[in-house]
Length: 188
Image (cartoon, rainbow, N blue to C red):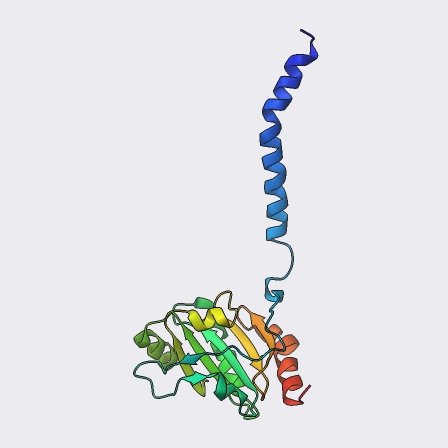
């Protein structure tokens, strides 16, 4: 037996561990690469999905359907939940946006209890013209929602023009959302 045989056996024994470490390093690098808010959406430029959401039980605002989003008015559709901490963080920005009468804001309350949604809106304010209860999350899946919060700009003819993944910040509002709203309002 040659002197190199034990070294070769040791290398072969460590080969699975070396391959696993290399693969783990590749996954780790890819996990933190890129901007998670730039997740692609196959729905951009297409009509909103067919859906019908009832009102949040015990709340005085109506639910809505895709028909309500194709009545000539630009709409911001915000997917939120009372249990979502980032939703609470972005809510003051939605309250400010609601002051602009050129467009309306609709809310999809995802997988939430009605009493919690009512408490959330009572505490933080209500920027929504419509609020639909998506208790089973089915409508959110149709919209391609990855997680709450997400915000969509819908043109007056009911097409999705823009999607923002994650909580709105002052930076994303100024740099992305407001330009997308202006573009939709201009009919481009």
